[in-house]
Length: 375
Image 1 (tube, rainbow, N blue to C red):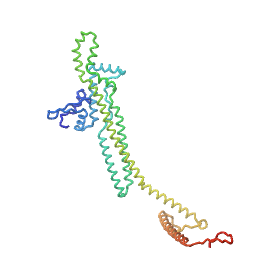
Image 2: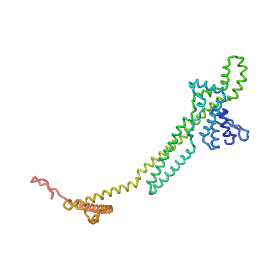
Image 3: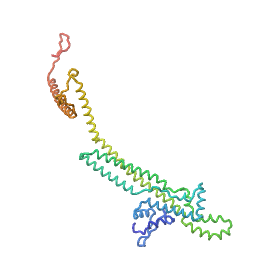
Image 4: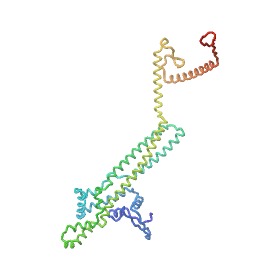
């Protein structure tokens, strides 16, 4: 309903700090033509101001709370009646040492920046697009796939760390949103203006003097204590409650992003198991050839015709005796050995098949008890 005559940002803050409007009340707003009245909630008006002024709800509520505390602190410096009432309430709660500065102090060292939430949402969306691109590369058997997966996993871990940091900040801010000495605020929210008036009259014992002082006391109370004083304290309680609720909603969004990131990390970890690090594969092959090279060289150096049952086939290795054995020689020798071994296997298979074709006969000699023999 954008066709309503909404309050401006400054008017909205001022009216809330004076107790004229608040979270516990509806507001009657006329439309722009002035011929209709619409009743809306305090929260709906807050959302309108957030959209129109491009500010976050927490930022708006922080400004309202600061204005309430500033006005209360100023009222305590100029109104002895107000200060005296505060002292009475604090003593009732066994907090006699509390000063107005303690009661109306605003604690907000590190306010939440809504831009961080927007930035993290965009980055998680970017990671989702990168995941789809990786899936396409897997189907197309693209090269450097391991490197792409590893970089993407690193980005996910960095994002997860930032999200956890934001969640921790929101947890710390919860204490700052709470009003100082909530019990005293709650008590004062039930204390209406007439209570301040009666406290002054009770100090005068003479009835006649009380009657004479009523008009003067009324002027003093009306000047320093507004009629909505109890609603101001009520707003001082409900606005922080709205802040706590908004804080939890923001934290929930961060936790949803964190859950999404954790799923992506698990998927990438499974993919990395299927695609081992190419650098490790090259290192493993190099170590294998180096060890094999040392074995061959030691074997050649220590072997002789009398000590060994078989000689190393120099022709098979394809090298001269005076030439050192290299990795390339080892690779070539292994290939020749595999080919020779395959040829030998074929010959063995053919000999086995010929043996299977020969039939042997078993005969028993009944006359002479002899062992069976093959002929």
